[in-house]
Amino acid sequence: MPEGPSLARAAVRKRALAYIDRRISDPALGPATVAAAIGVSTRYLHKVFEPSEKSVSAHIRANRLVRAWEDLSDQRLCQRPISEIAVHNGFANQSLFATCFKKEFGVSPRSVRAAARPPDRDRR
Image (cartoon, rainbow, N blue to C red; front, side, top):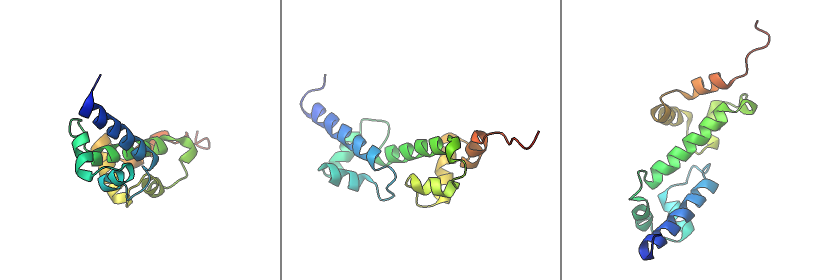
């Protein structure tokens, strides 16, 4: 079990991740806002995330993309425009969203949406 500084950093990381999860749709969410919200400096927050494979910003972006994938795959949301899903998940615009999405998953948001659509019952 971690002790001393390691335990403190683990607690800060846990608070940061919880805050990120609660505010993931906020387009202004970034390392500075996370740090301020949990009461640490931005520099310290970056140090806390240093040992992991993702920076604070990369973690935020990855979480947003996973949630967007879930929304695009949700048949209940198939009528919601992709641009609305992008904004709802904290992306400033659909173009940036589509670029990040394709880079992360290797497929476009449109193709994920198409695969999730229920079959058209009128066409047989």
